[in-house]
Amino acid sequence: MARAVASVATDDSDAASGFVLDEGFERFSQVDDVFSRSSWDERIRSEKSAKFYATYRRPLANWKSAPGFQQRDYAFRNAAWHVTDLIAAFDGESRNRDGFLDPLSALQDGPDERIQIGTPADAAKEIKHIAKAVGADLVGITAFDERWVYTERFDPGAEGPRPNPLPEGLEHCIMIGQAMDPDLIQTAPSALAGASTGLGYSHDVVVLLTLAQYIKNLGYEAVASMNDTALAIPLAIKAGLGEYGKHGLLITPEFGPSLRLGKIFTDMPLAHDKPIDFGVKQMCNMCNACSKACPSKAIPDNEPNNRLHNRSNISGITKWSIDGEKCFGYWSKINSDCSVCIRACPYTRDYRSRRNRVWLRLSKRLPKLALRLDRREGGGERKAAVEWWPVEIKPRE
Ligand code: B12
Ligand code: SF4
Ligand code: SF4
Image (cartoon, rainbow, N blue to C red; front, side, top):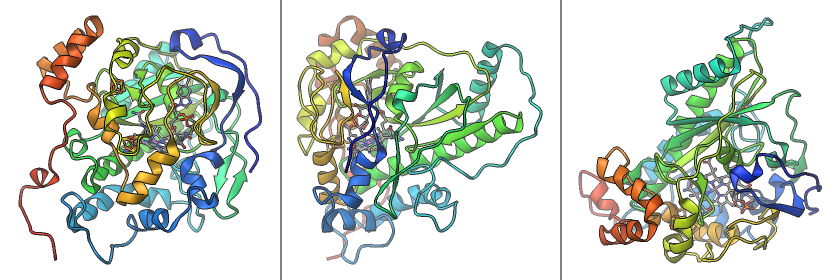
């Protein structure tokens, strides 16, 4: 299958965001992400990957006896996904799941005339206020940036590309962060930990739909998007939600990397946020906890570079990159998604505790010491799934 069409120029905000693009840059096509490739590419598609997806839809015939992979673990994981799955199926017969292959379509048109809400700074303040009231854990706003928009959407019916249209004039992007349950994450790898993913999406869906409908009710355009349409991480960095880590994920000062991202493209005039720096790069330069912990060896412990592991990496950017084929291969083996890299990262901690907020301040000034403290405290260690459940039950023989 052909790669995406080349385009692009460097943006003025790249230096502040820490983005390094070169002439080899090409926008990414969703056809090339690992999930799409598990439909059309024999390098990824296998009986195991088919079984992996099937466990999200119907019960396994034989449950595993390993703790964290038993019937109730899968029952909870799939229940956590339920609201997301209902919304994903909203546009009927289509296999282009809303929120994954298409934007969320469960929205109504607003009035023709637009309600003015003061300056862009006032409007941004109001949007953040509403987003928080609806349940968003983090909100940041940035300019629309076509470089991170997929060149094509994936069409599972045709197993190939289809257009990725966005209305003209959506100059602003609201980034939403939804925390993932830290207690569930600590049990990764497990189907139980997969419930934190499902819950993250289900909360995200409610926040995105409500906020987008509010914007539409004011007479503006709003396109609500989860994993579809565009790459979330570079937009979230630009919107000041956090910094980029060696494990290839956004790290925030509020939840570390333990969060899910959503976005709303809009033409409502909004003031933009600025990228932040709280010392992640220095920390990642001396830490390799994610790389060491990754069960599939998908996270290299190296300097940022522009090498590609395979066609599932975007090209022409100097950054840390993971090998998505290895990562997804592991998911197919365990019949659930994995969050070990989130669990292992020293930034994943409960910042409601004063002690952890002090740790975060220390991590910026003295990262080596902060890292030693984290390891001494047993940071990143796996908790037994049975400890999460209030009642112990014996697995079926
Ligand atoms: C496809 C996908 C995957 C695939 C495959 C990735 C691939 N290479 O194909 C696999 C199965 C590996 C995967 C795994 C996970 N994923 Co994932 N994934 C996505 C998805 C849907 C699309 C990303 C994509 O198209 N990647 C393909 C190319 C672009 O990959 P790449 O070149 O390696 O680039 C990656 C990063 O470098 C970064 N990135 C891309 N462009 C640029 C540019 C700059 C300048 C920078 C700094 C970074 C950057 O984003 C890419 C993320 O894959 C996004 C949602 C979205 N639309 O962004 C979620 C997303 C990135 N995943 C997410 C998560 C949480 C996970 C997992 C922890 C699983 C879980 N429990 O949820 C693991 C972590 C693996 C890891 N360490 O990265 C979150 C990340 C949240 C965060 N804190 O950053 C996202 C945003 C989903 C969400 N709605 O929140 N994922
Ligand atoms: S999700 Fe698991 S397998 Fe994938 S990169 Fe993270 S630790 Fe490795
Ligand atoms: S585990 Fe360590 S190296 Fe990996 S992203 Fe977190 S801080 Fe960086």
